[in-house]
Length: 132
Ligand SMILES: [Zn+2]
Image 1: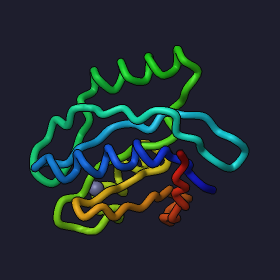
Image 2: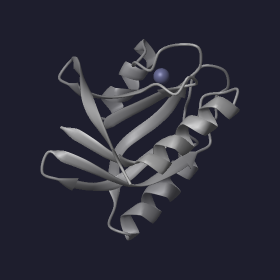
Image 3: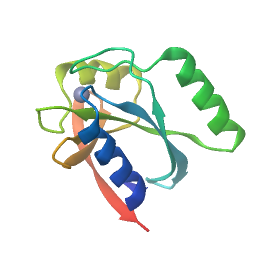
Image 4: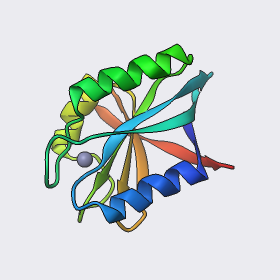
């Protein structure tokens, strides 16, 4: 499985990760092509927690998903940032991954990133492919 993301979208997420003192989060909307996921849109959702945790604002989540579905896009991933810890799923993230079994893209303030998916109880890394 691979997830294909525009380089400019990835750059935008990394830039905001560096700018914000709290974790940022949102959806990756797109389509499936066989095993692979093609991200067409990155949608930031306000984080209603502060510090080093995130919880997307529920009303904004619903709005974003409605908008995307109208345009034929589905949730292919969730992204969020980590501050001062590596871009790997935390224990808290693992719980979220059970609720949202899509690809989780995690970015840190140094510009490192990783994508992960939960398969049963195992976390598998997903290859991130940049595109123009
Ligand atoms: Zn996390």
